[in-house]
Length: 225
Image 1 (tube, rainbow, N blue to C red):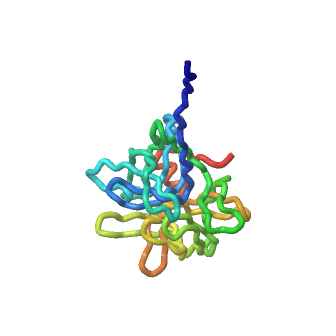
Image 2: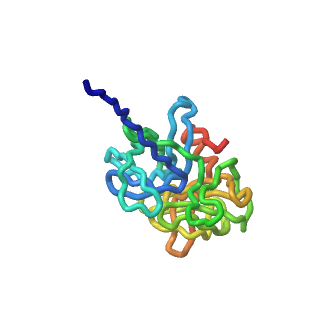
Image 3: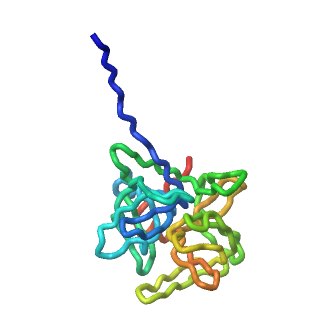
């Protein structure tokens, strides 16, 4: 009589970091800004990114795209709420699948660093001074830093008029939209300041402040405890 061995099916887990890529079914690339809980349903977790990553009239689903990865195969979830005007933010429901689960990591991707490749988010910082050092993490240009050039900035295109933006001279590329904007507490930990909304051809970057997103979206930031 032969013995039978039952092999349990393993559930794979993909960790998603702030600054990782998010690519939609419409092949629109953005970046993860931060993770948050729904204030009305704390069991619901969102990946917060830019609202303009959603294309109207299309049921958008998003997949994970790590830095330097060419193809996205891991399902994250649908964008269940978004805003473009006046404030630019979108909420992707963190779902995954039964065979490939998704784990939110409230850490900023900083893989290019030789010292701290992951930056824990320990707090929030409301930037209030010109010349402050502010950094960002996004899929395309990775982690870069610059300085605050202005407040209450306005971004205007044919469809939107976005107010109350923080303006910096931080390097950013297309595909970084929605990525994390942060302030260093020390060499290896950061405070969250907002997300990337737009970049100009003259090297300026527009950031939507964190406090506006939390208020408008009715969400609570998840930090690294």
